[in-house]
Length: 426
Ligand code: HSE
Image 1 (spheres, rainbow, N blue to C red):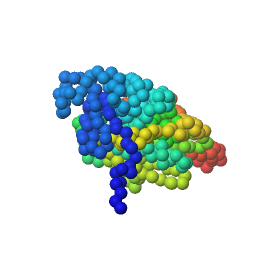
Image 2 (image 1 turned 90 degrees about the vertical axis):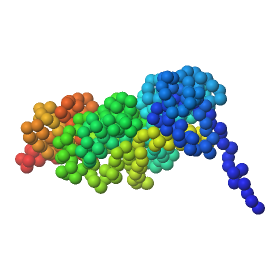
Image 3 (image 1 turned 60 degrees about the vertical axis):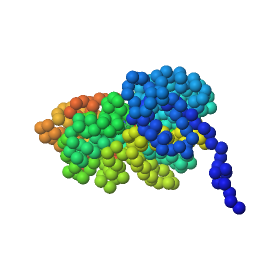
Image 4 (image 1 turned 90 degrees about the horizontal axis):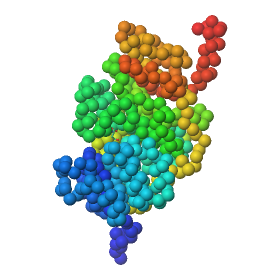
């Protein structure tokens, strides 16, 4: 007896898409959709800002009237792929209110409005998916939502911005200048339209904010935690790293620390050659999760660019066919964990002028190096002090985290040190 396997498949939903944006990712999505006809998803219309711009596909595909998509009852999915976060917010909000499912890749918009967007998708019983907003092709949000649901996740850390990783690779490993490396990242479609979002760390911070929601159920604005980018890293820092056999990467970390504290930060960090993240180069992203029972997992994939991002958007669209939604279980469960800046970091700070380094802020200093224009210290500092004080963000000063940056037992070590001092041992 022959069975028709096709007939046994569940009924699929026909997806009619209204797409906002036809930039790097929008065009990438158009191409990947053409290559996946089995998906049963078709683009009905694409809304763009500038109707006069010459496009790669016929003009009848486009409109510049957002309502044509948002009010069209035939469109059941809005795919938002524009880079203006405020306009994206209005589009997404209206689409959810109009009962349409939404797929977005706009990390800035999501990080800034997640609480409200979560409320709206629940209220209107629609799905809001955004895998493409965090590490592009790496399916990290769905893994955090589903796989780590029952496991005791203790940390998520990694490289979450493709442009800065591309720039650091080109500068530190291939000797290119910063400007040229940035230009390449822009030309390859990795960087944001405003590349300051990448190089000053805002983009990575937005992604960390999204990770915090799905990993630990905490919706936290980026202003609440410590972050910086790669603009202050100096050639002398890179040379020193090379001498010590280390690499420098911009790393986002969310980690449970003592008590019920959750530390979150995005900072440049020294990475040992044997660390999984050391081999994450160019526009690739890499994430390491640690949890009590599963132990360590390492995810690596392209973190920027047209097709890697479009692939994640496509996967979200495909997931709508079986009514997939994020459940935000950890958020609704409300665990005891709270974001805290009350923890200590081991940092390397270098400066062209020793007086720019505020030595008073350190709990203790382990290494000193004084040379006319190349001064550096390695010491232990309270994260809250770094968040409050900006001396380490002055021109000419760079701060890079130690390989294992979070330092515990600081109070005990301070007492110990004090008693040794009193006893005249040190
Ligand atoms: N500008 C971003 C990056 C694009 O470089 O990672 C992908 O989110």
